[in-house]
Length: 358
Image 1 (cartoon, one colour):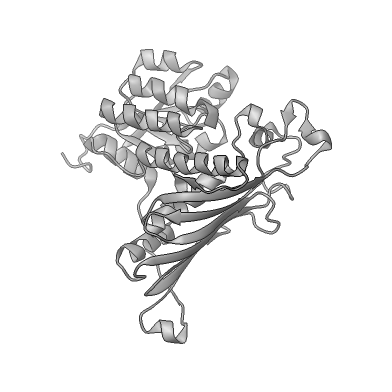
Image 2 (cartoon, one colour; image 1 turned 120 degrees about the vertical axis):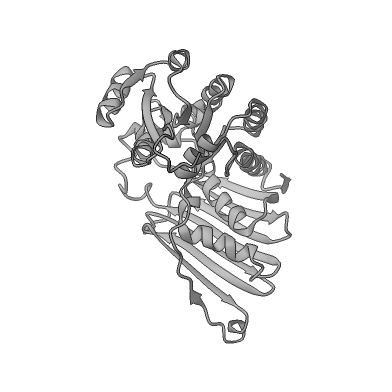
């Protein structure tokens, strides 16, 4: 049956976790013609009640086990805090529910690989929300590399720059737990490496069409308060990371991420060079730009901006995959592979930047 048929039943969605990112999930599903948000769950009863009222969601739960016992949903969007991804996703897999999980899939490669293995064995649709894959120029850049226009990839430079530790870009981090938890390992944070490092690593590997083979990394945590503490929050999570990375296709490059990039709200950039051409892709101030230099333009060093049509949307890809019972990407396997790189990077930093095989 075609998905456009009026008789096609909507995918009934449970949203697990009702923090700020859950609003983006709710907005996406509400706009989708084949999705229906039927329930939400959060340990905070007042929070889930407000969320359900805001998004006109008929059922609410203060315990995931209660929602699973109710069983009135087909698929779940897991938008819990990073540290809760493993336990909640494990429960949903056991219940046989299709799952879209926010990044990271888990906070360790062992847990992430376990979730990927269990999800495959359960035969469910599983996906990780690596949101920058939604950007049309990112999708087009990956197509350019796949076409062979750059030849063999040799070198890359990538960065993810945020400035919210130097300005109140999204509110005052010194007074808001919404941001303070991201600076404290005791509150589940893996620092900038785990928060946005996963995005820039996927930015590189997705566009280059190759996973990481090894990594050397340095992490830094800077003084931000008296005794690096604000109330119950010890500010010990890393604020900046710098990596040297080798991809499986042989390309060598550098990847950096920081929350101290004054003047950059939330900007990503990749320069990727092959033996037949190069590309530069950026996503800055919500706008994507892709430029290439290939063929005869190499001699004159002429760069051409590439127009990019609207590409696929991850939420649409997930809903369609649930309805057609087909696996989609980026899957839990992708999430587990990226977590392996993050763990190797963290291990490298602990060991003085020693190169680690992924």
